[in-house]
Amino acid sequence: MNHQPVEGFSKLSKQGKIDWLIKEYLDGNKEHETVLTQYWNENPDLQKLHDEFSENTISNFFMPYGIAPNFLIDGKLLALPMAVEESSVVAAASKAAKFWIDKGGFKTTIINTEKLGHTHFIFKTEAHKLLHFFNFKLKKKLLEATEDITKNMRNRGGGILNIKLIDKTAELEDYFQLKASFDTVDSMGANFINSCLEQFGKTLKEEVANEESFSQEEKDSLQIVMNILSNYTPDCIVRAEVSCKIEDLKDDSGISNEEFAWKFKRAVTIAEIEPYRATTHNKGIMNGVDAVVIATGNDFRATEACAHAYAARNGKYSSLTHCTTDNGIFRFWIDLPISVGVVGGLTNLHPLVKFSLALLGKPSAQELMSILAVSGLAQNFGALRSLVTTGIQKGHMKMHLFNILNQFGATEEEKQHFVTYFKDKTVSHHEVIAELEKLRNR
Ligand code: MEV
Image (tube, rainbow, N blue to C red; front, side):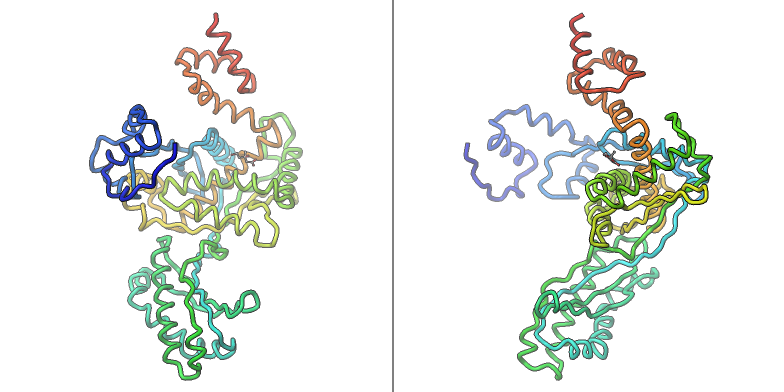
């Protein structure tokens, strides 16, 4: 069937949108409506709040919200909220937290908290002339022009840290940037940064137009291409680490402590040198980071983009974590670039986000950075620990078992049977199906 474009979809009521979708795409089958409406919230205020987060909403998409307890971070014991759909992420985090709790826990250091943004512009002029104009006139004007926008942020201890003129003409003809760094304190700061940058664009235009040292031809060549923050924040970095004597690295898989430390370190080295492995390794780290990023109402696309750009900063995609085993000490750490907020955005709106932040003791943005890096490091520790000993399928499939059983509509009694059946065996998809068939044909 060929579908017709729709006019004014956003103006239809929620029911109107659903009716249109069912008629146009779902053969008029009303059963689909039940799927959507069963997720509607009975509390009209809460539903309205969710509807207004985004556009054209017709239902709510649930994610499991779990807790990984026993995280000892910089001497504080925390229970981490994790919004994630993948089986075994929360279990792996909890297991790693427990492993490190009696070895001093996780230690973190904020290395820097600088956020960045650019005004990208094209200007047919000589770079030295532009630099002179920037240093002696424009920079001051840019700061003055944004004073109103930065006032509140300055009162909170943040604001614009610096503005530089960057000559990019070697890479693209006549291309320059105003590159600004910001301290956005407890907010992620996207709106603040973008507002400052848009003002930079306007001020740049005005000041160039009034500048006598530029010819009319030069003035006419100026084009502000865009004003936008960068999600790449290589100077907004937190380090999280764990360490202990190798003799205390007791693993329950049956291998010796030394062998475990050595195998673990080798797995990290492989991720450092091999991009195929690094991608999966870092994906596992982001399992832990994103789950807490989502639970705390932050932007997981931004944290993903930044982490992967940073992982490739030396020209080759590599591991975000590192490990050493020198002088009998096992040390494992992550340097994570991450820009998050605990005010603004969803943080004061989404009830579960408010709960997450309360659970974490109302952290500052820097404390949240630490928690996120720890969550990523713990997740990576859990994954590598399994990979170099038992393999991940044992733990993963155990957690995934209920998903498989639910696909086949298993009853509670059947589920109990499978828990016992797989107590000492690795779960596999085909064995679940075979055993279910046997059970049902008995
Ligand atoms: C699965 O979501 C993540 C892992 O593949 C990560 C890894 O291999 O390190 C287990």
